[in-house]
Length: 141
Ligand SMILES: Nc1nc2c(ncn2[C@@H]2O[C@H](COP(=O)(O)OP(=O)(O)OP(=O)(O)O)[C@@H](O)[C@H]2O)c(=O)[nH]1
Image 1: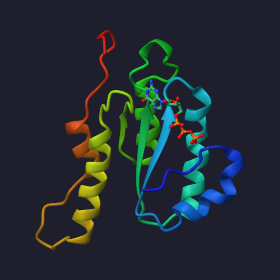
Image 2 (image 1 turned 90 degrees about the vertical axis):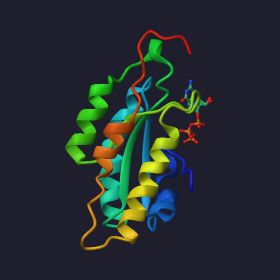
Image 3 (image 1 turned 60 degrees about the horizontal axis):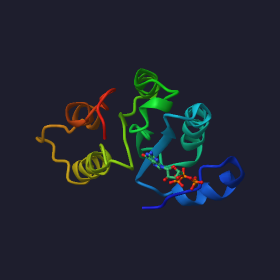
Image 4 (image 1 turned 60 degrees about the vertical axis):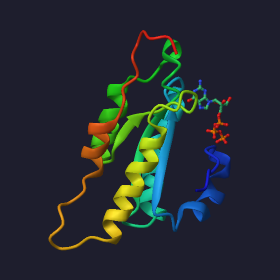
């Protein structure tokens, strides 16, 4: 697992990190609009440099900081739908959906590696939708 630098000025270096990656987690910060706006640029770039069949997941992180939220969950969902990628909000602080993000990707890659003709297909987006937790607006963490 590589954690690449998100800033624009490192962009030329990051290609080398994800060029051969099997999966990419794209994170934005729900309290920072520019991080959300940057996701489109990342998706365009990934399209150009990453493996054609790379598994992509969009994550809206810092879901625990509801008081400073700038990006609605629905906006993340809409962007994810537009690009056909699974989406959920996460919190590195509370751990919400963190394990699920990695588990869903692992399941997708495992499914692809061992796919048999008769096997029922695994749909990562359906799996994520059925398993993900949604941040509650008013609970104290
Ligand atoms: N409350 C809260 N803070 C977080 C969360 N995730 C990260 N942070 C904080 O946000 C700040 C930035 O986190 P980083 O992990 O350095 O962010 P990054 O995007 O990897 O930054 P670069 O390495 O510069 O690309 C740190 O102070 C973290 O403690 C989260 O889910 N909730």
